[in-house]
Structure formats: C-alpha cells, structure tokens
Image (cartoon, rainbow, N blue to C red; front, side):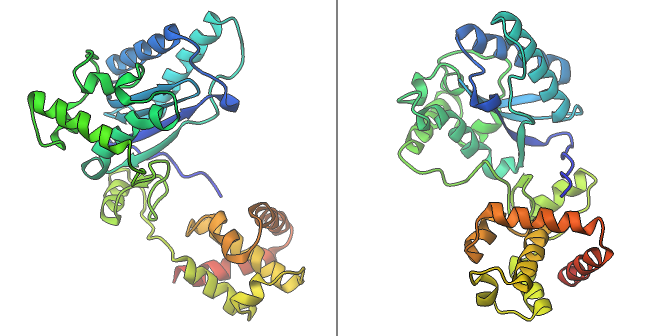
Length: 313
C-alpha cells in the first residue's frame, strides 16, 4: 500500500519520534545533547515553528512541534541532516545516524497536549534512565518547573490546560507529572486514531485536519464488514477460514482478506493474525504472492476490485 502523504497546515501540532539507526546511540555525551538543542533553537529562528516539549535519550528523541508555514518534513530533514553531519565529524565516524524516516502523529492539542507533554517528560523514568523527571537533564521538564531557562521553549499553551498561573502553575504541573509516574499511560501516543493512523483525535477532529490539509477524508471501514464480504464471496464461515491446513480455497480467501486489511487500514495485520490464529509473517507473505500474481493475471485484480467495491458501498 502506498504511504499516505504527510499532513500539513499552519498550527498543526505533532508528536515526533526519531530513533538511532539500529537502535544505536545518537547522543554520547553532554556536548552532543547541547549541540542538538542548539540546532533546535537555530531551526526555530529560521522556520518559525514552536517546540512545546522535548526529551532526548541516548538512542531516541521525542519532540512536540507546532508548525507554521514551513512543513514538518523540512524542519526535521534539516535538523537531522545538520546534527548527523556534526556528530559524524565530531566523533570521527561516517554513515547514517538515524533510523530512516521520523515518525509523526498529528494530535488534537486541546485534548492531548498536556498529557503528551507529561508522557514525554516521564519517558526517561519509564526507560530506567532516571528515577524522577526532575533528575533528568535532557528533557524540557526542568524548564517547565522553573529550574532552568530555555528561551525558545513554548510552555504557555500547556500551562493553560493546568488552569493555573505563575508559581501555582509550575507546582501543579510538577505534581501532575510526578503523579503520572505511578500510573500506566492512558493513551498510546505512538499511534493515531482508528479513523486515521496519522492523527490522534476524534472523528470530528480528523475531518477538520483532512480539510485543512486539503486531503479527502475516508471514513474508517469496519473490519467486520471486510470479514463478512470475504466470507460471503468464498462461502465460508469464520471457523472454516481459521481452520488449520493448506486448503487452497481457504488460503486464497485469507490472502484476499489480508490484502483488504492492508489497503483499507481497517485494522492491523496483528489483529487479523490473532483472529485467524495465523502468524503475521505468513499473512504478509500471502499478500505479497497475491500482489505479484495480480501483475500478470487480470482476474486477480478484478476479484480484488469487486471485493473492495462491495466493502466501500
């Protein structure tokens, strides 16, 4: 399935995550962390975006970025390129530093900003790198609590959700983050909503994002409907589809079902594997074989299209 385009409009707020290539460290010492923060500041001065929070750990970094006119892709490309060039030169090494493309989830800030900032500040605690958020030097928590000044950090929008001002806001925010360390995260900020995996928000918010981004919104397809269409087409029950064995008719139905799961995004391949009692890798392999066959056999394409048309009715 083709990768969906990035979403952009002035004012969009993203949770950005970037890992070291092969999980290797991207920060080796205090000089590295300091340089990266300096490059963030220079990027803000050049592109006019805002940073609401950050957490830099040895092999992974998280940012909350609010863009203006310049899209996030350009901001992150420049930041990653400049830091990689500096890091390789400073440490006398070569090659890729970061693991491919950064991950970005566009969030509804009115609903999730405060909680996201808390989880980013708790990340070093949850990973075992610190025993308390206040004891970790390379996140924005110290700045939020008045222990250091980071002039380019934007805190006002987060504090508004604390519903206090002045020293009371600092104290309430600090308590809110500390309380979170004793709880499981309520929201998985590493994935989007059921309506669109790129966006974390309710359906109304997703519709608004798509309109502002000048992209077409397609309502989420219920996986139960995808299942029903395939079962009806192949005249099978779910128990028959999930039964062990290598029946060709059943295998073909599972391959089309997995392909439709991928294309519609109705649910994950892991969800399908658990439901059918099949390994995700075997389902993915079946889809690839079917897609290769489709390039040579028009009947495969025709069957797929008929199934998809019934699903989208």
